[in-house]
Length: 491
Image (tube, rainbow, N blue to C red; front, side, top):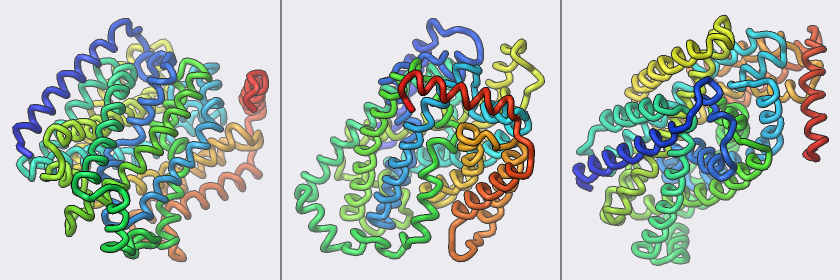
């Protein structure tokens, strides 16, 4: 595909996205709640599309398709585990929304700090998330870099794609915060799902003889790719190690759990969850089938993450469809980048700069915008390393974020849970995750995610049993949630 066409498409996309972002700014009020949470007034349909675009980023059409290209049908099971984890959103979503609105929380870790009556819980959780989310932000930048380089046949350097994604994300995040992101997400996610389905159908019927012939060819040429562990990658311990962090993704990743604060009502949240389920199931199947299609049409790729970019830039996809799909994937990646930057920025101003207080709201917002720029360029430096396999790197980031899972469960369901337990489980859990990830050590053959969650949970329970809980705060927090849920007939 001509680099000129790619650049023209990117320019048009940036102009349209900027127009939408500026339009979203109209009527925008001042303050942190408006900037980081869109005033807690997002409708269900927009929330569903935005949640989908944020979650299903460059990872899906680049990372998951690449995973399928190299590992086979195990990639489908891997991603369906994540989708099944949405049951946690159905369970925790109303609880997050209720306490967020009642106690005016901006970040999920601000919620934990208040629940455990110890600001240090919020501080250590924020620091831990900052460490582990930067690689995931870099994954999105890498996805755009690989995409633009791949569709242009290498004419556009990888780093140019990474740099453009960084600039776009900064611009739209600064213009109108979460409101800008949700508005642009809505259009982007619709383009993403519609075009990806159309291209898949076109490729399979035009070049692979229809779905029956398509599956028959896979069975003939790559029979091992239709079984688990397939060509050897998805053995049980590997599958478990990859999928466990993914199952808890919806509550462990703050850029996702923070979205539980933005619906305007519980009804809107239900619409968000249902819409995301439908979107996620379709997009998962499409991404996996893209991986298989590329395996048949363009075998022998040295780098699996180049499966989708190579397919879009090949003779098998009409230029106009390839360009639109490229924009859709780029948009999804930038949506996730924006969400991560906004979330990390909110963690800094609400959980680390606690001395500013609510009276310094505008000062917090100013600091938050500076932090967004700093975070973006740190991600840019990380993406410059071009680490292999986007899907694996995504999971590695999620491993470290598992450390807050016991604290979140304890916050809502165990009055005996203590601040000391939350603090030490997060600190030691984070050290465990970092140590295992960097050393490559897998005790008893199990991946870091297994040990991180196990150690964190055991510590949380044991320390809670031998330390004093904040009784007044725990009773107030949990009793309020249970009473509201019972009154609204949600329990």
